[in-house]
Length: 251
Ligand SMILES: Nc1ncnc2c1ncn2[C@@H]1O[C@H](COP(=O)(O)OP(=O)(O)OP(=O)(O)O)[C@@H](O)[C@H]1O
Ligand SMILES: [Mg+2]
Image (tube, rainbow, N blue to C red):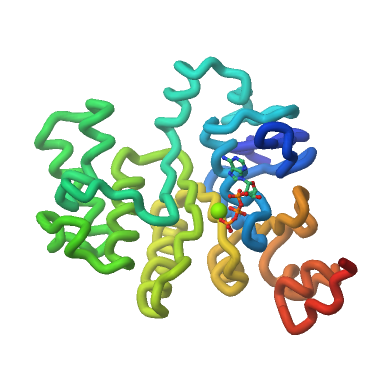
């Protein structure tokens, strides 16, 4: 089997001693869509922060292509971070810039190409997300779903090795929810993108994931494909899938 693109070995994550994730093992293979599922506040975003190297493990190791990144000095870590793209929950666009400027931002910042090559790449990724006609608009003129698509185009522009999505569909109306999910599936099937998607939406997790890991009290209590999740007997998983069963929870 291929080497994992990202791997956690026995990773414990904390904030000032408060343990969030304990002795976690995680493997994300090239081209895989891994969904981390779990209720609010359980530590899903914290795992993405650790992948990005914004939070260092209290113990354990994190690897990228088999090389440990969790103990790298900040200067080297920032180079590693450039190979990843994070799509934040709220898009995090620059209000004063146009859509095209937002999408080209990292390419300009990292001086990855000259101006005409950047403009070409920006057009290409805007077409990919279906926003080729919105290049000169500003974020305030866009709907929530369009902003999210711009954020995805911006993430895609530097051709990252891995996409990290934090709650990509949360707060969207059904049409935009569907559109963003389709875009994720397009990244998966057309770009063979490697993705880690954090969500608490079970349906979306099952439709997009190759593999789902469900986080509960600092540990993964389920790992496997969506069809296995639906058959899982663990009471905590059942209660999450069907809240009417929440009485089954032991505490
Ligand atoms: N910078 C921080 N300092 C201290 N505690 C934090 C910090 N960030 C998050 N936490 C705490 O860590 C826990 C996990 O937070 P995290 O944001 O990873 O959860 P989440 O699963 O992403 O939740 P949500 O679904 O609400 O986004 C929460 O109890 C949160 O209050
Ligand atoms: Mg979160």
